[in-house]
Length: 532
Image 1 (cartoon, rainbow, N blue to C red):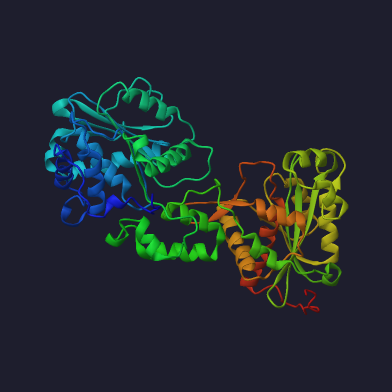
Image 2 (image 1 turned 60 degrees about the horizontal axis):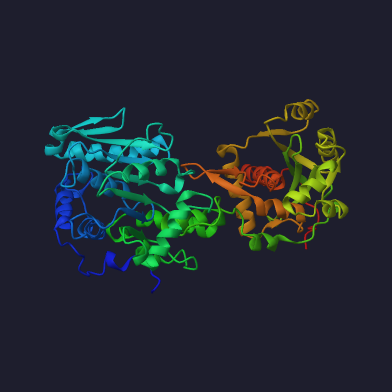
């Protein structure tokens, strides 16, 4: 079968079966609905959505029951999945698919997500006078009740304790990629198996990783898309770019975002996101997943393109930097964690040279190698990793190293994580050393991450190829808030260390802040350029 980025039947104008007229009936009902945000107040059912409705409801068996019992729709964010899902719910709550006394549900991983479809339904109901008179909306309980025939819609989340024992005629599952277990889905499907002509409609964006139930269903959907005769009751509707597609190609965008030509998602926003993903590798995976439907192999987006990082492998003569401006980033570990100091030296040509001092407890090296396969003892033997006696890093030695660095270099700031470093921080501060309390929150780390990313992308981060530091950068992942600010997030493998990358980021962030303030070269005559 020819590989496609979208089902061909979605927009090829081919006739779709509708022997009983149920597909046309469903389309007519949805177009009759009102929506407060739609042009002219009428529900906007675009052609690709109409084809999906016709396919689901028009494809019937000789006895009039629907052929499809389970639908898996995977399409990018901003494609109005929630509006389509709300319309389907209303088809079964108060429309031609309703059954007196039969209940319908929506399900999501969190209560916040579960409320989205309920909210969308409530907006449509309030805007459609006939429905507004007959449906009671219960916002607190996230319910809608069709009073004439006592049909109840209810929104559920994955932690719902009452899911078992339900017998849903329809369940819409929203953003299935966020589910971590099969518990709720098992309860829904076992309940639906008690009844005839039920429908499970799953709408989601692409996810990440393979150790989750959504990946299993996605894999199955791809299999059935290739060989539909294997499961005639399952309808896969996949909008996904090929992994090797150019993620900046707008023709690919249009193919996998069926609403883009109608204005959703917003083209300008897509272009801005694409530009950011081009300039910031850490945003690329999210763009591909959320807007191109490309399932990502990892749960987190890799932060740095290590091929670009390696361009900064130029020699550093540390002794020649004596007396020069320096900014320290300090990440202190606990129990068997590592501790790291990274010294960042702004150079007159706007390069920044970074030199790490990373500490591990000597008695943990063998165990570490067994867990992650890294050459910990070799790093020590080669002088790339410092050790202290015992099973935890001796923080007194780390403090002594900070003081030694302050004696040799013109240390302008010591950026130190405020969490758990109170003793060292206070002693250094009491001795007049320039402490900057650097949190690990979005507000602190966001600007610092942008600063060091810019250095990497411009080839201005000089690191000398330090192998432990490189390992930490390759292990680092980021988490973003709703405003796009980022901070470090530990990967699922807790043995993969990132302490050096965090310290380097804090140090380079303070270099960037000093440059912005115009303070680095005040009263300072830079020495000879020591970077090859």
